View 1 (spheres, rainbow, N blue to C red):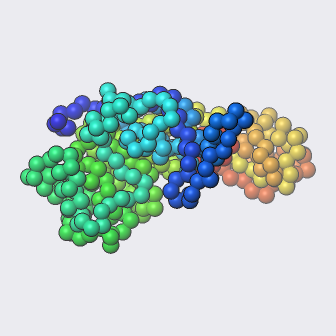
View 2: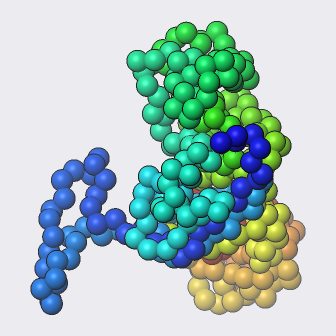
View 3: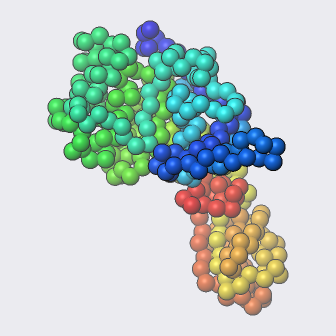
Length: 343
């Protein structure tokens, strides 16, 4: 199969659900099954990771899954890369149903996991050439590709070193190079920049853009708003296993009511104060979230401060803190969920 000749490939999921009925290995031993009122076995452990998630990733785009830890991003990638069996729903890579045509799907995809899983008993170059051999590349081609990728990812001087002594950034670069060895039509990157220094993040972003420029489809997961904003053509914001918003970063930011978020902390926030803040010019929404905090969504920021001070004085409240943020994906998530992407 000549992967170079493949036209751009899309990704699609339909009503994906995944319910884990046993904890992951790091969670320790399960407690066994309980019995329901009707006598049927009922799992003692049950976590809904995906709850009807539907996506449509266009061929040849960089698509981001943006959400906090535990939102279902890695489970989605696990299903799409054939590692996790969905409880229900369907997923396709191009024309292939992921669970029914796993071998065909694996030929089309490259995967960079959240945690490096490199073989520390091989050198960097051997890791790449062994991967190429696994996908059926001839000796000359896999050696040529390995050398080109080592050069591209600035690892040539470490080609004959084992990665056990590599920095986190070097291991991540090698992981991405390995995923690209068989020239996959679709590349999955699970939290690719987590824990990396700014210079390495910039290099990885450049490599992702270059690969996408060759017509490749890229899906990445992240909880980094800046990364999603600068790198992705479109973004799906995911929370509790479902999509709460999807669009280009610009479209999503424009969809926030008012755009600007003015977060206020008062000594107290009586209903009369919140009602008064809602009537200020340019304010589209005011939310009181306890402990004297009020979030205003408005079409402007700093110019509202004098009016806010007047409203607080009239209500007998003291302002302790003001924070203004411009339209962002973070604000969109706050608007939909009431909490931060970083929580």
